[in-house]
Amino acid sequence: MNKRVDAPAVLLCAPFATIAEGLARFAGKPDAPGAGRSLFVYGFPPEEEVGVLNRLRGLVATSWRQRFAGHAPSPAAAVAASSQKRQSRQKRHGRRVARLFFRRLFSVSSFG
Image 1 (cartoon, rainbow, N blue to C red):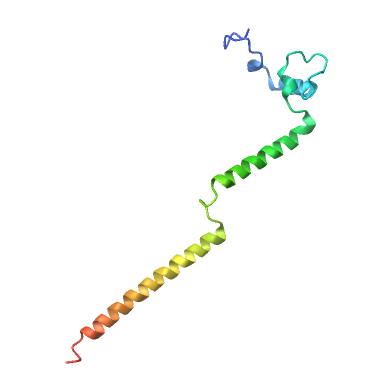
Image 2 (image 1 turned 45 degrees about the horizontal axis):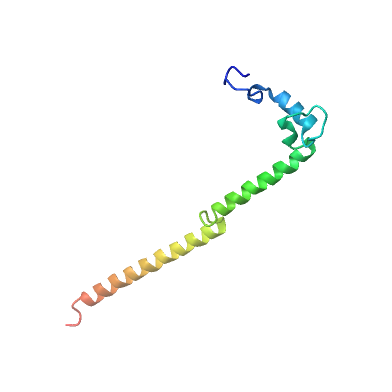
């Protein structure tokens, strides 16, 4: 009985060294002698740990890419969008200048 949590939970207070040792001995070996009712038999053997971690990292990376697809533009797309915005502003500015020029040109009473 674990007195800190008032439950029959041994893993809650086991040191990491003990957990690593149990995984090394029993992980992936449900029929190993001494395994009994251990949770360690459900762990991954040490030789498979790297592969499992790499698969999990890949899943997380894929998940994040899918979740945020379209939210953050690529650097090339950001530059193209910035360039398009600048060109649009320049066109609007050019039209404004042209309108002012022609208004002033025709508002002068040179015709009459």
